[in-house]
Image 1: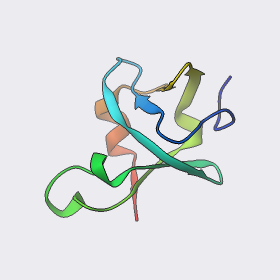
Image 2 (image 1 turned 45 degrees about the vertical axis):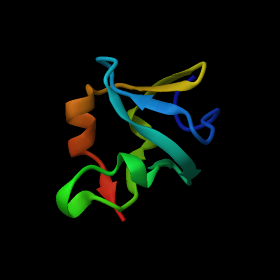
Image 3 (image 1 turned 180 degrees about the vertical axis):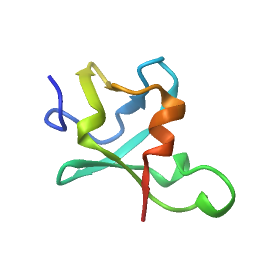
Amino acid sequence: MSGVSGIKEHMEVIGADGAHVGTVDKVEGSRIKLTKKDSGEGSHKGHHHFIDGGLVAEVEGDKVRLSANAAVAVTMEEEK
């Protein structure tokens, strides 16, 4: 299963390498909104970040696995 169907609140988002990217706050359209607690440091702290649903490789159990490694996925995040 790919895309955002089946993604639920509080699921862990991990990169293709298994590294933690964030925690799902909710799905908005075709994007995954991450919780603020996973927003990083400095100017990124306290903002919601979004991952494009096109990066989702699969939803397995309580995890959302991305097609990109965590370090790459973080650079593709959108900030709001």
